[in-house]
Length: 199
Image 1 (cartoon, one colour):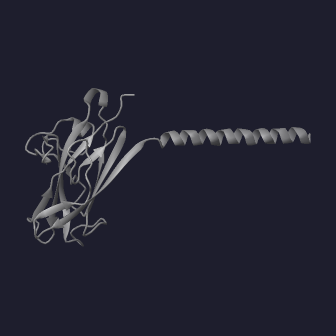
Image 2: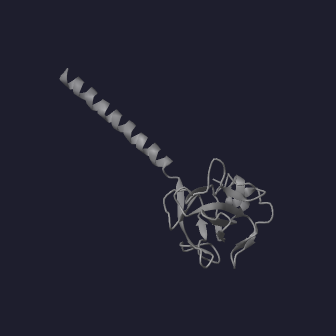
């Protein structure tokens, strides 16, 4: 009787170990999804009228400050924050805020400059920035968002590489003075999306 009890007990332990092991394998599969999160610091120099990006750029071609490369099969996030106020604040407590972020799908690589005058290609909404207004290019602010010192955008980077190839986008960030909202400065770097594999 003791032997049977011992065997049953050992079997239960073995079965529990299999369940835990299987669960671990399932969780590890979920965690295999890859992400890239860029932290982009913005330094507003009002005396010279320049909005400087403290982020070494790395693109597929023509690297420059602020250039962002999202590798194949990586979803992405971009967090813009002001050097003067790195935590999330509004004009209630800050002297300056990020008031506008726009995205363009056409432009030049060298110098990096987007064309924000026309309508954007639809891939940028379907496969990159879901909140974008294709007519204006605005991705921030989108209600209920308000101008702030820290903004995070999600980049799906989901176009099928075999069918659509790499995609370029340009982003223009505008910072405004809280004491004089009409006083603004901008910066205009570029990004590359490598998309995802078909299978």
